Image 1 (tube, rainbow, N blue to C red):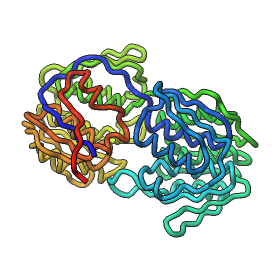
Image 2 (image 1 turned 90 degrees about the vertical axis):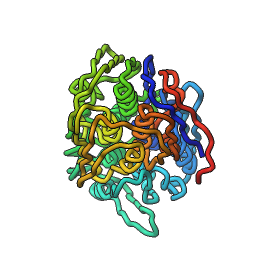
Image 3 (image 1 turned 180 degrees about the vertical axis):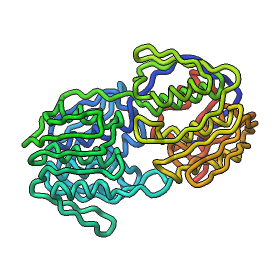
Image 4 (image 1 turned 30 degrees about the horizontal axis):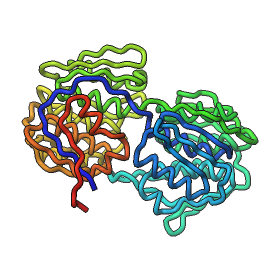
Length: 422
């Protein structure tokens, strides 16, 4: 295993290109199961989660390779198995994305109940209810979802909550179902929109893309598309912007979609950062004291839950107290005890972290508990006095490509070193 060793106290300055979206590409890859053929997905980040999905696809019979340019080659002409085993699915919740395509294209799927980040229960019942609405027979035995359907049929499906994962799985399945499917209260995240556009390029008939109501007219078959362009990673972009704000720096992000970051950019301006947005470029400068502000996570276009841990770290450097409330995953505060080890004053009450600003953080050894928690600890280490060791950065490697190298290019003093920790 590796850890990060950080010497805090340096402002971040310079330019960084935003990588392709992890969450989007994890939805694009299983879509290739719907139409056997050869695909190339550009701007694929080299991440642990991408390799987990690649290994899972390989167990189904696909051939998949990632080249050094970030182009992912996927060949699904040789699919011969329909089971996603526990050994792969336990590592990442997005593995359940193979359920819809396998069921729609091959009429059967056996998928282990998923694992992933440890911040509270995230049931898959909306996925399963969606498949049942479309006519699938669903059973759960020995930790596996067993699904069968001779032919899926369109249906009206209302999601109790706008789940990204459930919307994705229903989109897959409805594209090949007989008749019309209407999804209401669908997730509107950019990653869902990216998938819908790929499906349309494959021949799917989808209306309402980017809205909370999706209408899908099923077609008998889809066709492979030779090239798919991944979208920028809005969570990575937000993380770098917050890092610059915390260190009172000035950075320029390129290859980004500012429209995907509206809620975050609004809050950064509210606390006193200066922003200049031009096309696919965002420049941020933060000088002096920052004003505290409260955030409440919400489905897109609201403030993303995947940024709340990083925002809590930022508020440690603001001039006053603030509140960080998570309405999506109310228990997603596993990073708080570790920030306290650095000297942070944070109290968690129900689904809200109350953050006391003007904190003097002192370097210490801290341990990651999930992907975005890892990012918050790295950010705190950038402003802490002295040395901070961040353990279990394999969590961070799931969602940030070569983060330490890119932070170093911005002026951070951070190194990846081996550790004997198990």
